[in-house]
Amino acid sequence: MKKLLSASEIGAMRLPGLPTSKQAVIARAAAEGWYFEEKKGIGGTRRVYEVPAQYLSAVEVAVPLPTELIPTEQIEAAQEEKVAGTIMPGGRSVDLETIKFVDAVLEEWLQKKGLRLKPERRAGILAVLCDYLAKGATEKDLQEMLKVLSA
Image (tube, rainbow, N blue to C red; front, side, top):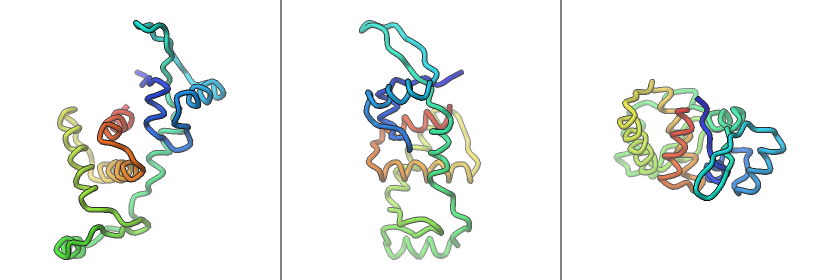
């Protein structure tokens, strides 16, 4: 089953390579020939679009996973020193509270869906969501992103 979203919803997701305004998303969809369906409702007929895979896969590629593990001792030492974040190999400083918040949102969503993730998949999704939050996303935006990632 295809995941269909309105142009406004697609813009609100702030996907890499896509515009954020409703009008610009509609124009891009028309120019690139995206799949769409017309839905009839109280306000009339509207189009809902399937976001091409190239834009969704860009989300997972945009935040690479670390190539090596950080020893537990270093993580514990950083937490004891109340360091705001930990520098990951190939990454940037990340606020521990942000990670905890994103992890709580992800865990709640997984429980509602009755899903379990492999640790490496969970880490990748956490990285994407933390990056998304750092770019100004809200908790509602995170929920929407989870819906897209699970489609």
